[in-house]
Image (cartoon, helix red, strand yellow):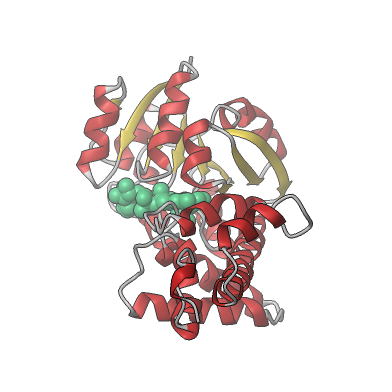
Length: 300
Ligand code: NAD
C-alpha cells in the first residue's frame, strides 16, 4: 500500500496516524515535538526530519496542525513541503484553519503542481481513537474520490462539500453549533443545580428528548466528574471562533451568539484555563451563579 506522510502528531493526529497504520499504510511522520514521533516510530512509522523530507518520500501528505500559521509554515516555510518536488502529489490538510488561508495555500501549492484538499474533522479525541471522525472535505472532486478510502480509515464519514475552503467553512459552522450547545448545557445545568435538583438526574431525564445531543452526551459526564482534561482545549475553540468571526465579518454576516460565547471563553483564558477542555465553559456560569454543578449539597 502507498506510503503516506503525516505531519502533526498531537491529540488528534497521533490516533489518526495509528488508524492509518492499522489499515495497512506505511507512514512517514514529522512533528516539532519529538515525544509523539518517538511513540509512532516505535509502532512502525518512519521518521522524517522536516516537512520537506516527508514530501520527498510520499505522494500523499496529511497535515493535522493547530491553526493557519502552522499550516502555512509547514507548506510554504523553510524546509516546508513546497521545497520538495511536488508535481502530481496530494496534500490533505485536516487541521481546522481559516477558509481564506486554505484557499491561499492551495493556490500557492497548485503553482508547484501540489493538489490540495481541506478536510477538517469533528468528533474529538474519542472519535479520532475509534476511527469514527466526521470529515468535511473541500477541493477537487476527483482528488476527493482518490483519497476517500484513506479518509475512511480515520473517519466513519467523509463528505465532499464543495471547492477548496468549503471544508473549513463547514467546520466553522460545526464549531458554532458545538460552542453554543455547551453554553446552553451550562446555563441549564447551573440553573438545575442551584434550584436543588441533581444535575445527573436532569441529564438522565432529558438526554432522550429534544434537548438531547451528542454534545450533551460527550460533555455532561465530564462536567459531573469535574474532569476538564482535554479533549478539545479552550484555546483551540477560541481560535476557531475567531476564524468564524473573521470569516463572517468579511462577508457581512453578524453572529451575536458566537460573539458572546467567544468572550466567555476569553474570560476563562484570562483565568488560566486555556488548556482545559471546552466543557470547562460551565465554570464561567458557575462563577456568576456561585454554584458548582455536580455538588447539590451546597445549594441554598
Ligand atoms: P495539538 O496541539 O494537540 O496537536 C498539534 C500538533 O502539531 C502538536 O503535536 C504540535 O507539536 C504539532 N505542530 C505544531 N506546529 C508544528 C510545525 N510547524 N511542524 C510540525 N508539527 C507542528 O492539537 P489537536 O487537538 O491535535 O488539534 C489539531 C487540529 O485539529 C486543530 O486545528 C484543532 O482545532 C482540530 N481539532 C481538534 C479536535 C480535538 O478535540 N482536539 C477536534 C476536532 C478538530
